[in-house]
Image (cartoon, rainbow, N blue to C red; front, side, top):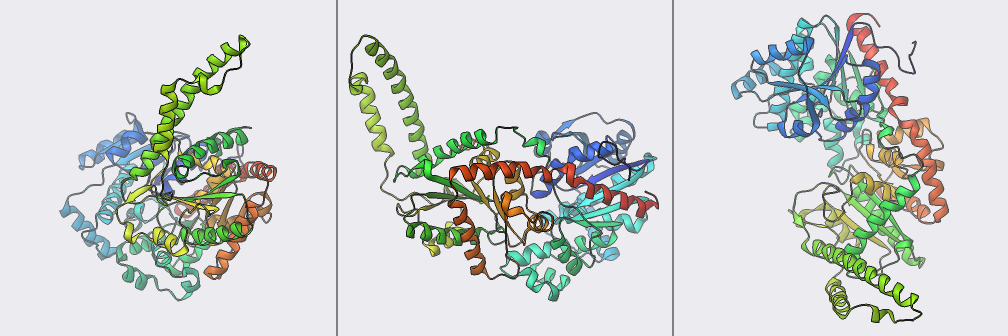
Amino acid sequence: MPTQGGVPPRPDDCILIEVSWEVCNQVGGIYQVLRSKARAMQQRWKDAYLLVGPLLPEMAAVELECEEPEGWLANVIEALEKEGVRAICGRWLVDGRPRALLLDHRLAPERLEVLRHRLQRDHGIPPARGNELVDGVIGFGEVVRAMLVETARRNPARLIAHFHEWLGAAALPQLAAEGLSVATLFTTHATSIGRYVASGGEDLYARLAELDGDREAERFGIETQHAIERSAAKSADVFTTVSPITGEECARLLGREPDVVTPNGLDLERFDVGHEVQSNHANYKDQIHRFVMGHFFPSYSFDLDKTLYFFNAGRFEPRNKGFDLCLEAMARLNAELRDAKSDLTVVFFIVTARSTRSLEPATLYARGLLDDLDELAQRIGSEIGERLFRESAAGRRPSLDDLVEEYWRLRHRRLQHAFRSNSLPLLCTHVLSDPGSDPILSHLKHLGLSNAPSDPVKIVYHPDFISSVNPLWGMDYEHFVRGCHLGVFPSCYEPWGYTPLECLAMGVPAITSDLAGFGCYVEEVFPDHDAWGLQVLKRRNQRYHDAAADLTERVLGFCRLDLEGRVALRNKVEVKSQMFDWSALASAYHAAHDRACAAGFGAG
């Protein structure tokens, strides 16, 4: 195919409409796929590219810059409003600033009931009354269907409609049944059943050959979700998924093998800091030091210059995301470092989102005192500096204590005393809504990880997003990642996995697994991945404790690197990350769109 500047020309007389529940609506990983891919799509399609999502006013207010619609889109919006469907359009406030159309999917109960009946009658999709999310998905599917019908009437161009995940794809079976002249694609980023089976503690891939999709959907009470997903996969002209390992699930559980695998990339220009990778790491590591001082130093201190920061972050699916295996490995690493009488400290962070009542008062109190100590130290330092300068210039050699006024000496002592605590540092930074049933706290107790002074490995369970407005941090999550030394993501169910890829983009070495789509992709394409900072842990057909032993050896090996070795590894990671930019990976999406065009219209 001829290309222009590395990007293939778009098919003649075509517009691409990409539909997802996560357009201008940050829920999970699909939001990251769409926002990071937008620039690459814009390069090929220009303004013949439109993203369509649900109209959620609070999200739209911060995600969309509204514009007055023009041309065919204005006519479509006008026609929809006559049918009682509110729509707004504008530019999504992400790199590339693609056009976006948001549709009000909230339908009257009687209208939803009609749609439930039709979906069951025509496509075998059972109703799920009383499920607010499913009702929203069905409503969204109907307004998307109406939008595409109106677009086909009012725009002479050929339409390619690309649907993501079951939440955005309820329109697809209806469109196929109606015979609308539109080429369709469906991308599943994970199967509903796969996610539920893996979350339940079962070995999905060991059992995959024997699983029956319909029976599993009934077992987990997700018949409607599974049926929409299966119908969308079978109805689409082209079916894609994000990794070969997820393709195995689709073939078994949805009854169709993917036509194209579309691996996910990142818009690395967003992360590019030029030659400042090392200085950024040092600066943001200092900010993590500050958190660690506030959290641990009231109880006891350790050498921050000999401290490493490891982390895992993601949705609260402790088994799927490998939180359990991480903690098992940290317990073993703790024993190994203690036995070796190592002077190293490892702080391991679990960052996720949980229902909490508040920040832990003791944690917040200690951080406030630490900030007061800092302010006081700066004040005293400023006064001492000026007085010391004058006394020195006069040829005198004053005692430093004599240079500090008694008021400030007393205040300093009081703050130091107030900062001290006789309790162990807390494992969790927040008051959880259900601490007695929290699996992470239970697992920590079982493993004997308690943040004791003699433990070389410390644990910080942070059940909230890290952001600049969080009083414990004062930094964004991206900066937190840059300040860490190693990302540890040994997932047992991860159709793709953005967190290790984000680490690479920010110059941070990472560990993923061969049960993550990203890990499988790296193993296949980059056999030398260990050498440049991306390790792939074997978890498929591997017993839990064997995987834990392997992970322990990998993190122990990282602990044995000296400063020079860690710096060299960060440099290698940053260079290699360019291979995961959308400029390298968007070709799979371009091929899928061209294939849909050929299937839907008989032409390339």
